[in-house]
Image (cartoon, rainbow, N blue to C red; front, side, top):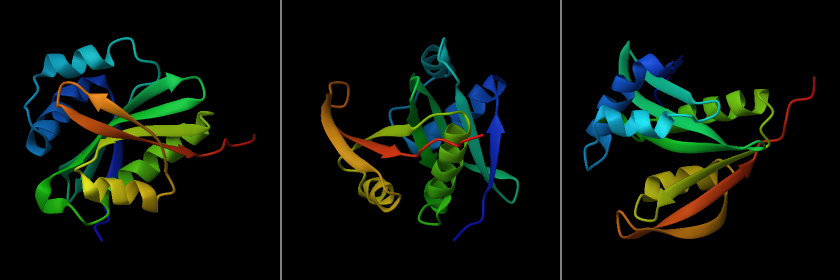
Length: 152
């Protein structure tokens, strides 16, 4: 199990998010894709996972509605997968969201990404629906987890 450093980064690191995304996913996306998606989002969060000062993973999310945080993207470089880095990113995100008063985290995942599906189930997410992704011509499984809220 890797022990990654999880670092919160601001909007100035959108380029790094895009570079990591393009090493993990296809089709490639330009920086404008991320800038459009992040524009006007409430409480945007970008996390970077580093191992030995090397960025090896990322997570991006934003407020879906006042009670629900949306994990938009999470990815880990192929050579660092199956080391618990995605789980560390998700756990850091959930703690951040809980501290800000969100009671639920929602995430969508393509059905063929079995390791992510298994990770979400291990982390206590429930399947709450399925939706059609017209861009990829495939189903997305919708997951949600109650994270509670901290009481001050």
